[in-house]
Image (cartoon, rainbow, N blue to C red; front, side, top):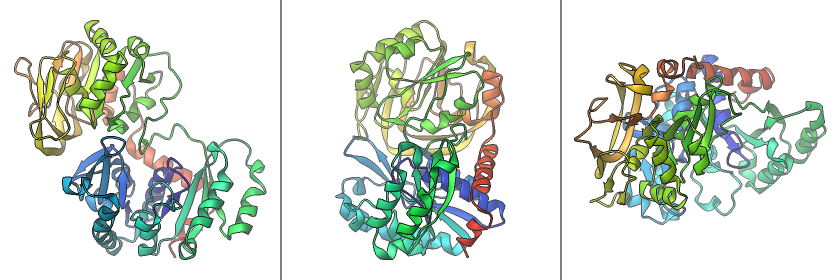
Length: 463
């Protein structure tokens, strides 16, 4: 099991690397995270699961399965989340008080964990936040309760770049129950920059205080290529080529699909929260949204609606995906109370209605002939996925992909498909550059693990 001293410490990063490392060493591996909170999700058989566990399954070379992330919380506001259980939306649980909900979910979580343990040589479990959140320990269903259920050898990873790493590790260890401390087998320092000799005598002093060795020091590696677990990722240094701006509204979702843009040589990528960023962009991207009405209000409050309109009116290329597609339309109606009705920006001639049932689909899609900036994508075939309640009617526009999943209007390409930019063929057609494949990225993580853990250490954890 991989736990962290904080959110963002590198749990998903380490768990993904370990999944590929152990798989390369001949073991049948599966990932597991009891409960994930993220608006980054992927479609698999049975519904949806968190993107991090989806990528960990691919790292482990196994078929992604909703049991690997039995509970997914998708934040809709600061105090409300949509609850997904075994891939399906559960509004009854969303309305339940969270402590009661946790106890109701535990039998499902335990059953999924036991299934995976019984059918695999090794399960790589990822925790959430910190296992030392003592205000939540009585209702824990994702950290040490899971570690105890699996009798898991547990690592605690810390982001040393934030400062205070040894205090974070010591404090986390000390706040755990005695029986849970016994499961901790090692500490991992992540995102280290500088001279390794400067760490001494910190690791040895920490071991004398806790009895726990520091098993690895992982370097800062911004270009690893793995999509971030959540939140807006580092866009990287500005390039001298095409300028791409992604509108970063508060309820942005599925932003992990844009990680390949970081790998395009010379491309300048930025997150747009100000009108000037939009005005200076060559290509504008409106990503998915978990709360379209709320994000429309945010755009208008900041004058970004005017900036988006100016970009489109100037006939500059725009890519709108799912919620972004809905934002550009005339209106959004919500007769079933799914998310909330709103007036769109009115920049594209269509309207959207939220349906009671969510559409889940993962498949292969082919684009019809396109024009202008998007012409290189004509006839391109790629894998993508849909996660949506919205049904959009665009009677005046010709669909550019089957099942009314997308349209082109001027230089704007509006699609309900997530994941198009994860296709190397699409990236090559659009930008003329090769980008690393996902398999290259996952093997790179395993190589990093192999280099920085002492030989024999990782196998000793499972014996």
